[in-house]
Image (cartoon, rainbow, N blue to C red; front, side, top):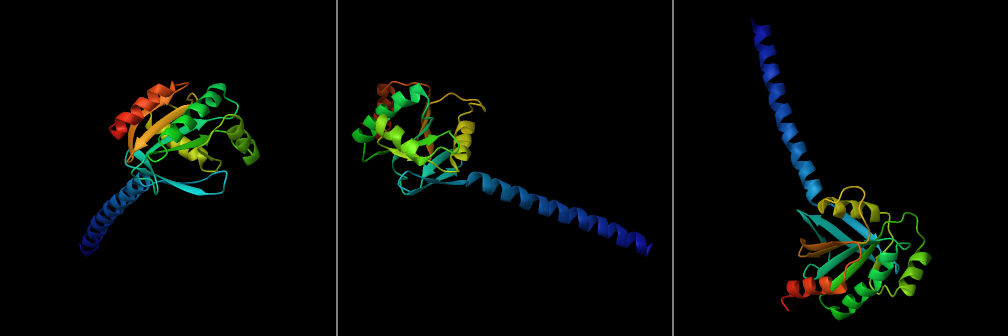
Length: 185
């Protein structure tokens, strides 16, 4: 009788402790998902920290600015054309906008990326980091584009909220209009 009672209590205690530990694990996983951090290095070796917050992304130190993430490749003709338009917008809204170009190319040399910037007047932040692929995947996942997505892909955020996204070659006027609306101009 005594052995049955101890066995029963042991089973109940085990079930209780397993249930408690499972909840803690779920909470830890949810916290990790909602606070992912990406440290990106630009061509000047300056680091930029992007954080995934709830259903958006925010650039540390630029929380009040519009941030456009440009997912591109140096060999992509529409990406080359987009670089000039993005530079124009960066200059026009230099106090309110930050554009970050994130290449999809693995193992690209900084020299090649700098050559792209010079040739196509990409006068905004270009990052070449081992975290590029991870951030690109997270942005594309949020946009629900799947694993095979077109480039260029642009995603515009303000205060970690997605404003709009653009796939493929996009007229500068469309992006400009969304920026003006977001700024209340």
